[in-house]
Amino acid sequence: MKILVTGGNGYIGSHTLIQLIRSGAFEVVSIDNLSRSARGTMDRIERITGRRVVNHELDLCDRAATLSVFEKEGPIDGVIHFAAYKCVPESVEKPVMYYRNNLNSLLNVLEACGKYHIPNLIFSSSCSVYGEVSQLPVTEDTPVGEAACPYAHTKQIGEAMIRACCGHGLKAILLRYFNPVGADMSGLNGELSPDAPNNLMPIIMETASGKRKEMSVYGTDYDTRDGSCIRDYIHVTDIAEAHVKALQFLVDQKNTEDCTLFNLGSGNGVSVLEMLHAFERVMGRSLNYKLGPRRPGDIPAIYSNSEKAHRLLGWQCRYGIDDMIRSAWKWEEEMNKK
Image 1 (cartoon, one colour):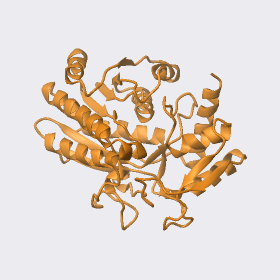
Image 2 (tube, helix red, strand yellow):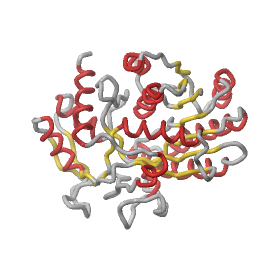
Image 3 (tube, one colour):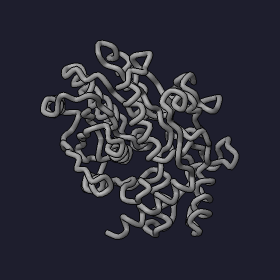
């Protein structure tokens, strides 16, 4: 079966390509304009899997170019849609850019799915759609709240767009995942961006390796056990594996509704300060960090109940915090060889 992955050069997209290939059940092709990813990703995937993935370098906001790739690559059995901007502070600063990119690209993908009769769609959503919640852990029945930033709002709108387009031959799964971290356990593929990283784990790695002199903890006065934000960190390979299982769930027609929602998280809330201390424990080295003010768009705490994914998809996390840290450090060492 042929699966088209948008944003296949990105962090989660590339790991999902690796897991799709490892499954042995799918032929894969990618679309990525490399605006938020680096060249060389397909080389790394080939090094890990022995398979070369074709990437079509184009902007999904370009309707004609997008449809032409779907025409060329057809018939396509499913799409996994990652391609989106995802930096929370940037979305607060540049909301129009986020609405234009994240929603226009999805609109063109949905049009292509209808035009070329593609039956299966997996959407990369986010726990940010819940906003600031009053009760934890979050389940799929937790009400969607007011978005804390434009990025989160684009995910809310994107989910609504997909629900409206489902039926008429299209089935979809919305995967609301929490905080992916780490790297492929080989250490040969991980988080890489041409811009300065804005996520916690790569910032920790850059600080530990000396690429940056110090890092900041954004907010120490939240109503949490140590004052820093609490998040549900999950290994990127576990996230990628969930996409493979979700796709197989649709292919096997196990869905009972046209659009199905799953949370993907470890179920454990870990604070920013706890993650820093975990790194120091696992790697035996200290981190130079300072305590700073809150960052716009952040919420105090969120973590998941993922029992539905365990029950229906047969998915569960295989990797813990120590694995996340060790694999991320192996990837940091790999990058430092160059």
